[in-house]
Every structure is written in structure tokens, then in C-alpha cells.
Image 1 (cartoon, helix red, strand yellow):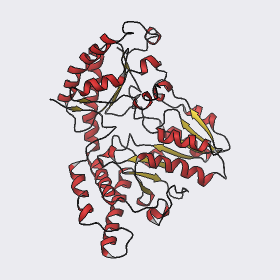
Image 2: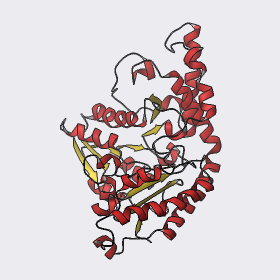
Image 3: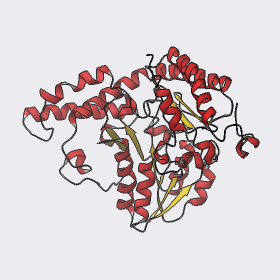
Length: 398
């Protein structure tokens, strides 16, 4: 059976070169980086080399990188670490409504500790209005966190405009760049950010790896207390093999990114145009231009997204649904709700995330099987054929 794996935002296979670079650090070079003797000091040296590779990928300095267990931990460290370190200056934080759960739930946790949080709305394409941000800032504001690119709808924010407002007001700015680092060019100096989160799996590194960039002299309260690791900012023996993998993946990403972007964008565009041509009543979500090159997201009328994901998987096609996390709680996706997609339509969410390993043949296979799956599910739907208010108002794009 043909397989088309188009869910790389969820998980990707570790690159062969990455795996080979990691392998010796499980059994042969097993020393603890904190030890002073050669088995440890040699590992410490290699670990610091990987820190440099990660820093180079995003235009940072080596000493401005903290290794974490994931992008989610990096987000937690950025939000809570800044909040706890700067709470004497103020207790107001601003985030957008479409942030990852690791940002939103960190903000909600801080609300229980008497912090005030403003949740900024977004427009129909998922963009934050910089003027709305400006109006939300108060003398108590200590941190703004707006994600670089959304993993569910693919929209890329105007981070440079947002960060410039924060700089003028003397407010720290963090961006969750988990979805963007490794998929588009990201430079912390051009974005003008104080903190930036990234994830290893997005680069082809193993699960359980990530990093936080923090601009020099940015104060952070550690979340994991322990020894001297990560200059005292994150206790615990380092995940050496994982860090080696992250560094190698960052090195490969820097070398291959332009070619990758061109390749995945071509596949993405073919997929989008094919779906628009072959299937009626589909909403294309996210910004039509300011979006990740390998990201395509849709809502299909009168279909449950999870049912469509399951049916496609029976044909070896792997995708995801934007409402997957929320559906288990019988709720629609908060991201789709925030951009104004009606709940009945949002339930039909389907997200494809394409990698350099994908081919045009796989896209053609998806375009062969997807219309039949949609037709089958709609034939079983009690609401198919009934025009919703959303489509009467012209939301549908095909």
C-alpha cells in the first residue's frame, strides 16, 4: 500500500545523519558532562559545540541557548521564568488567543497567582493587530508572548512590528517559534526578540529535545532547580545524546533550508489547488500568503475531522485535525474559533504538514483518495446539503 505521511508537525522520523551522530553517546561516550575527568570533559566540549550549532541556526550567541526537553518546556520557562523574575516590576502579561497550550496554560497558571493576563484576539487570517497590542499595554506589563507561526493554520505573524512596540515600551518579548525554526529562515536579531522557543522534532531531531533562546542579560527564574547545568538555569544531567541530535539537525537545517522551502511550497501549492478543484465547500484556513511553506489546512463542511483522518489512514495517508486536542472535550478548536470559523464547520478541520521527504507522487495519491473519503463521509452525514450561515455569507473558498 502506498504511504503518504503528511503530519510532520506532530512527529517526523529522525534524520539518518542525526541518528548516526547520536549513537556513540548511548554506550561509548557515556560520560557525565559535569565530571572533571576526561570522560566527562570531552562530552562537555561536544555538548557546547552543539549549543553553538543551534545558536548559529537562529543568529544567536552560544551562551544565549538553554537546552530543554521540548518546545513546551521552553515556552513554560520563558513565560513563568520571566514572570517570576520580574513580578516586582509588574504582573501583567499579554498573549494571543491562538497560542500553543503550553503558553496559554502557563498564562492561566499565573492568573491563579494574581497575575493579570490579556488574551489578544486575531483577525480571520490569524494575525494579531499591532495597534490592538499597543492599546493593551499598561504600566504593569512585563512580558508579551506572540507565536511566530501557528502550527494549526500556518499563519506567520508580523513579529518585527510587534517586537518593535515592546522595545519602545521597555517590555520583554517572547515568541514561540517551534513551528517555524527549521521550516523558514528565523533570525533572532531580525525578529528583535528577547526570548524564542524551538523544538528538536521540528528539525528532524529526536523527541525530548528543545531549546530556549534568551537575549543576554535577560533575567529568568529557573523552573527546574538542581545543579550547575545550563549555567544554573535548568538543573539535571543533560540529555547528551538528544542534544547531539539537536545540534546535528540544526547544522543540516541551516545547510538545506532554502532547497527545502522551495520543495515543500511546490507540493503545498499543488495540494491546495487540487483540493479546491476536486472538492466543494471547503474553507482554506490561515493566511493565504503569510504562511508556512509546507502547511495546508482546511475545514470540510458536514464532516468530522477525526473521522476523515481515520478514513485516510486506512489508505496509508496520515494527516491531522486542528480540533483533535479539543474534540476529546467535545469542544471545537480554540484557534478556529478565534479566527471566526463557525463550530459546525470547524469540526471538519484537516491539517497537512509537508516535509522535504515528501514527493509529488504522494500529493497526487492524496488528491486521488481524499475526494472519495469526503464524499463517503458526507453521504453518511445528516447535515450534508443543508446550507450553513457560514457558506451563505461567502466564507467558502471553493
